[in-house]
Image: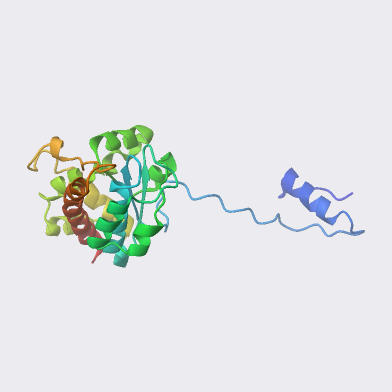
Amino acid sequence: MTNQPADMSRREFREWRDKHSSHKTPEVPTSPPAATPAPRPTDSTDDHPLTILTVCTGNICRSPMAEVLLRARLESLGIRVHSAGTHALVGHEMTGPAQELAVELGAKPEDAAAHTARYLVEPMLQDADLILTMTREHRTHAVQLVPRTLRRTFTVREFARLASTLSTQAARATADAEGDDPRARLSAAILAVGEQRGMSAGGQEDDDVVDPYRRSREVYEESASQLNPALDEVERILRAALVQ
């Protein structure tokens, strides 16, 4: 009987032995089979794409609008943008008015049409470099799920309000101090935005995007009018951080 090699686990040896049991003179491998690579740990610094996650309630109106609009705006930067809902209508498409407004504002029609709602889970938050929620309630929900995301989680209008007091030059200088690594540059710029608390005009009551679900076209337009200018500020800060 062939002895188990010292560098092979019992399970690996048993699988090897069963596979070769029909041979009269099996050859013992000199090294164990290559192990299956471990899944990428969350919050790592490897080469996975920079990721933005947008969050609302049902994931069929506000957060997918933000998703497809940001995806179109940031396509040249290679940033992954996706969305989820705290109480998602899983599998549902974007509502008709949300799709129409998103396309009118610059989203790709195929992206808007392809969306299906997903439920927000911890790995999505752990994997995101920036989390943009539609309301303060969503922000609280996200941070309670994964507390260590606190410093990279904002309502989208809060991010815009804070960013309004951070110049493009200042955001770029902050990123430049981190060298050439895109993730480090983006993280530094996001932290700089967070540090503007107490310096920006307006209050927290202005940080939510109104929910248009099952409401009139006018309310959808109001929601989009709150969301779209906020995305302008998100794009400005990200480009300052990542375009050298």
